Image (cartoon, rainbow, N blue to C red; front, side, top):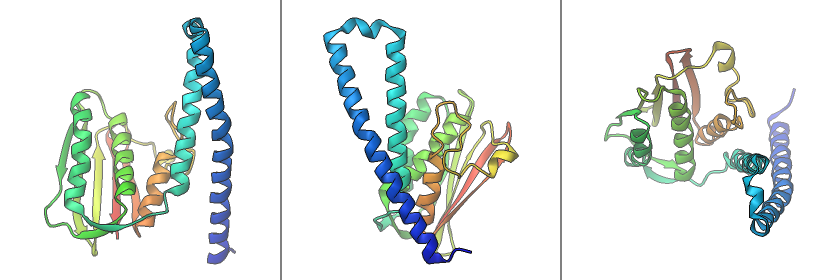
Length: 224
């Protein structure tokens, strides 16, 4: 049975390997992208081929995957500072509301003015919220979707619930949604929710999900 020191060592070795792997792949991808741009500039007609679009799409996917790997690798490294959680959560919701309005998805919020000031990494918390909200708006019907965000004080911290009326998650998938590379999306990387989980746990918190297929999902987050 592994002790805490062994687990920490294995985690550090894994993150180092992942960082080196991402770096080694990113360099040739950058070169390939530059070379493709040079080819397109010299021979504009290549862009008329369907295969050209497929190459560019796959290259974009690899770059997105590398960005997700980087986010996953750094999600547990936080720089907290005193944060007015009420004001900050409202700012995040205001930033996504125009997108949801455009998609005709209703956003409702219940965030009291009495939430405590907490030590949070604001960039990582924003990343956490955007990931969860994006998951929600990708699962709800358009138009007619509804996302509800509520927050309240709990055990010297805050609890945040993000609920949607989307397609839900099957019971067999609910046990694996926080595992790296698990995804049910055709173009998903399977790293969004693992990143969220690491960010939450770095803030001494926890996250869980309740879901009913064809009815919706609610994520329960606690930040301590």
